[in-house]
Length: 55
Image (tube, rainbow, N blue to C red; front, side, top):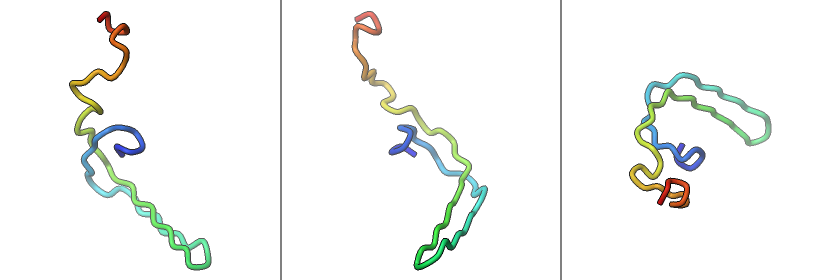
């Protein structure tokens, strides 16, 4: 999740499994988990322009 959204999460229970065989040697498995946000990206460090926050 961090790579795609920048959020840190903790995985919870497994909600859904989708198993797909589209053909050839390809086998696709989608796993969907319940997650809880574990923190904010860059918590404690403002990364924007200081002028935006009056500094």
